[in-house]
Length: 172
Image (cartoon, rainbow, N blue to C red):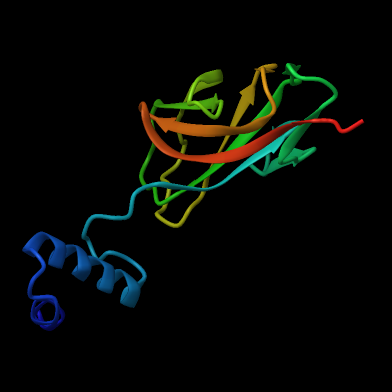
């Protein structure tokens, strides 16, 4: 293949496996898909926090109300009300059956302060460019200190991605 020969000539010092990966990337950039080659890993392009998440049964549309990006507490430690963490996942395809998914809320030291688990299934085939929306109901959570926390998405116990958020005390 001409592109492969170019890559091998241009990047001669790179091992064959790395050259193949570069070729996959070039093909993806030119065509927008991997032409039967391995696809990109599933990615969570967004994790959104909200007071509620409701899916319309007739249309499948997801409504998020009370979207926020931080907690402002009157005092620390702080117990949050129940809330939702909604994850949007791309680069998956096919039919999903009972895929175990977990959302962990971790403090800055990596200690899990809250967790929500479940499984995800799809009624129809998911296309590579479709976006799966997964809403996790997070129970009231105790935040012992102000600072950064992390919402981590795990699929089958493997980290898929995370989002940072902040808990701050009010400045009275």
